[in-house]
Length: 444
Image (cartoon, rainbow, N blue to C red; front, side):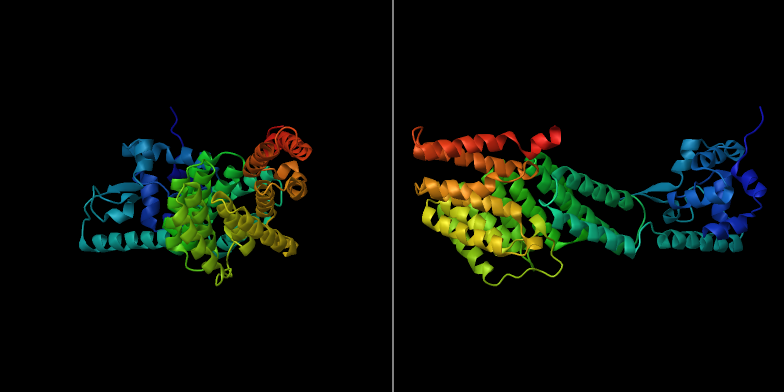
């Protein structure tokens, strides 16, 4: 049987010596000798440049590496590819040169060979350490995309936004599977963490808070790897939200309380303290809810948005906090105060510049207005406050909003009974509103 062409034969045909090929690939000649002898294999970052130098595809390169020189070495293909890494106690799998100059290698014939082998191993390490699959511009672009997605949140159709965020997450994951400097790795983990946090919020909006929890757990790991406190805070805020919309208010409160440990600058502290007050109220801890609400209002007096803070769900304006305060007071039986908070918040939303206006939070706040009016038995005002909510395009009728509007329909019937014309109109409008939601838009 004719023997297949190996790496050495192909190198020779292409006019390379071991030294010239090594120089082209920024490795040592000893590394090339190892590839040709079958005692090591190219690292991932060397495979494409090597294939280009030899004018073959990556599949063709694999065939060359499986050629005659490998058979002569007595090492199987799987074993040769595995030889690029070794097991080191406590460190998992690491490049072979980290293992030192012993470990089954041929004993050098003389001191000069020993010294040169050691020098070439150090050169290999330097080449590996300096190689990277990402640079400053890539990092900058990824964080820019995070900002664009956060800014577009609830202002664009949900499915394209989800797909765009998923693509960003996958790109960060793909780059992290390569090799980069530690500072770049931290930035990639941060970008991955922010994208996972946004995916978690979108999952809640689409009615799957259980899926949101999975994204949030992965986001927390990324925040830990990046050692990024603002990300930690907003991941905890996201976990609060996922638990809240599963009516697990005690768990939601635990997440919000832990998130407050990571709020140095920005508005995460305002959101988490306001959310914690609502969680405690919903969980039946009225006294603690009252004291936490007071703390949140004190925080609001001094809080400022950080210069690098993201938009959308990852920032908290005073009006967004006011919506949470309104909900808290309504749960605690203070409908007049709840209505006052909601009125002020809606006015602030309406006065905000269009590019900064969080219409998702605004709609939820308007629902708080409606519910407060209903509790106060002012059905006419409730019907008027509900109209802007009913005008929400189906693509923006996310699950939490539909849930709250459904509560309005139920409450209207409880307050007005089956004979009140206004109550019947509200209930009918709510029924119509529920027919066309973002879920139906996505699954149509």
